[in-house]
Amino acid sequence: MGIVFVSIGETTAYLTQLKMSKSGYFQLLYFFVAVALLSGCGSREALRGVFKNESPYERYASSLKAAKLDQTAIGRDWLAAGEKALQTANPVTLPFKETGYFPADNPKALGYRVEAKRGEKIVVNLEVKARETYRVFMDFFEASADPAQSPKPVAHADTLTTVLSYVVDEDLPHILRVQPELLRSGQYTITIQAQPTMAFPIPGKSSRNIASIWGDPRDAGARSHEGIDIFAPRGTPVIASVAGVVSSVRETPRGGKVVWLSDVDRGQNLYYAHLDEQLVSTGQRVAVGDTLGLVGNTGNAKGTGPHLHFGVYRYGHGATNPYPYVHTSAKPIPAVKVDASHIGNWVRVASKMANVRLQPSTKSSVYSTLKRHTPLQVTGAADSWYRVRLPDNTEAYVASTLVEGIAKPIAVKNLKQEQPLLDDAHPQAAQMDSLPSGAAVPVVASYEQFLMVRPEGGRLGWIHANE
Image (cartoon, rainbow, N blue to C red):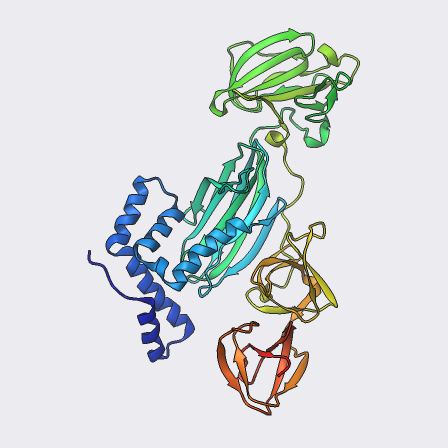
């Protein structure tokens, strides 16, 4: 197949001559991009990616580079957005839900930073609503303890499979990146949850029945607790949290009547101690939910209330905190409670001052404090918060009660001389139009020495406040 040599500049000039609408422009521009990606070396590069075991995102990025689109502004912006999402990922607390909008004309990637725990499973669900089907890439990374090192990719998916799940191997922050392919727009809703990887060892009980946790001092501080203690009435059944083989059934001075269960598939052993009675034998294969014994207080638990000491030991690593392996969060997935019509549009700070935070929570640290009438572009919504793009082009969260729409002007500016209408609040911003002397221009927001205005015709732009 031959290579199609069509530059983005030539395409833009041609479409400008045709006076094509913005939506038509991006549809046709996407066609040229698709042709470039699927022709010549682009397809060969994508094929090489299959044999190199690249992720869908990496194959797509390789195709952009092979088609020379990384040398165009929109291609560079797409690649840069992906890198920026990893470097500036917003920390979120699970469970988390956010809805937002991917604009076709502004390459965008989302970054979420999660404090993940070994043994839990992170599950991401993505729903995309758009007029046309398009791909959205989801990539999950393990952040290094060394900030100088790049995040390590550990899982990936795209919208051919709308669920990404990963069992966490280390107690490290993890980063989720979500990015659509070029020149496609649509609404997204993303949900991130942490789920247990094992069944709770006592049916009918939960994390609320744990009275002693990992790391609690033992023997006057001589050692620490290598497990969790789950309290239940004597004789309550204790079950296999995973499928495996019973590797040991014995009685010890510390653990009393114990059962060891080997989980070869995950490379770990499960330890059940202080049992009143053991109901399995060494070498027996069990399924999840099979009864291993009954709750008691044997061993060094004599004199305490009946409970199960439950531990997890990883092959070659020793004891690890079993809590994330079995904990099911009681927190519901937070619903989006804001006016979704603002997503993709501009709002302004309505209160005297507004704190912008890194997470959609008043417990999160303050990222910035904004003055009244500062304009913000809403890019998403979570719970009762808006995700907004700030004037410095970073993104954070602001409480929905602190902002308002910009339909109603805050003032009218009478121009004493002709003024350029700028596309940004910046001294070097490009001029979009010219406003005549004597015009009365509605002002809808302000930022530093600039005013956001909506001249006759409804086109938003910026003018200098002091001119």
